[in-house]
Image 1 (cartoon, one colour):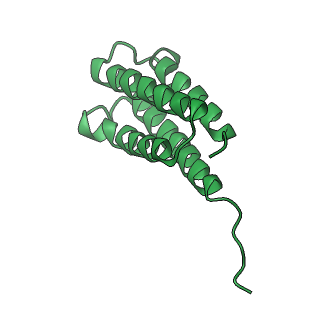
Image 2 (cartoon, helix red, strand yellow):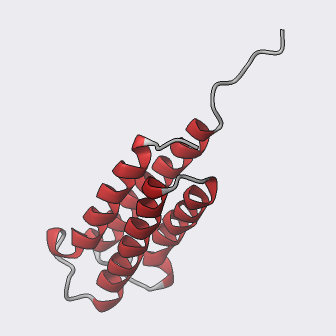
Image 3 (tube, rainbow, N blue to C red):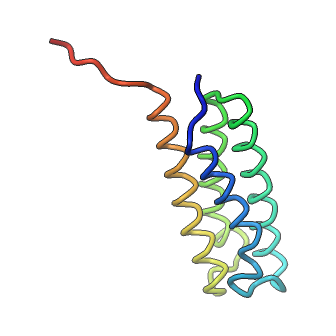
Length: 114
């Protein structure tokens, strides 16, 4: 399996997620900041592994991390913190979309059945 540009984008998104508590001003909210940091670091690690040795399982793990990130504001009760909740939701969509794109790309070109 060849290296994918989506994995490098994923690392950048993970770094952005780690920095988001300061960017969006919720670094004092323990649950919101903690989830951003933990999921952000996990995203960086998994996309980093994918850069070193691309395999499909990494993209599936990142897709699961994106789903966890999407649900975190509800599960941890910080939907009222607008900056925290929206940064989680937006980055979840971007990380999940990036992982799906990499999965689709890894399938290679489709051949018609003619």
